[in-house]
Length: 85
Image 1 (spheres, rainbow, N blue to C red):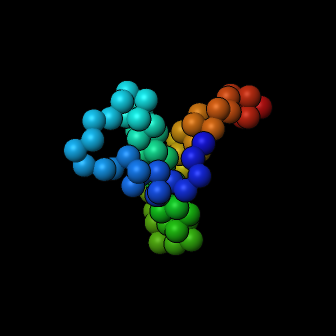
Image 2 (cartoon, one colour; image 1 turned 45 degrees about the horizontal axis):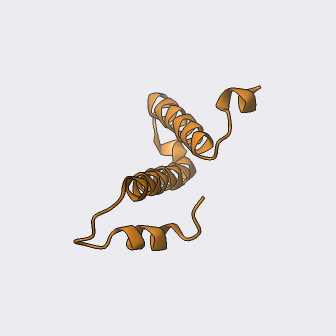
Image 3 (cartoon, rainbow, N blue to C red; image 1 turned 90 degrees about the vertical axis):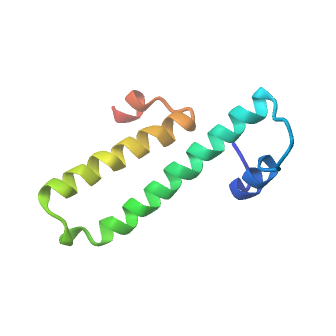
């Protein structure tokens, strides 16, 4: 969708410029993309240290990873239910 995400954010982050509805929605998508990618990265790092967590914490992390995957698939335009089969 976007080339270099951080450059896109900088482009939309200029002060004192009125943003159109399209620019605002693009900025929102970029923000969500950055957030989900960061969470996925954090989860991968946590997964490496999984032996330090309780069974309940591991289950919570697994559910969070599934949610992040679902969000990323929706953003990529992939139907999650089709992929699941």
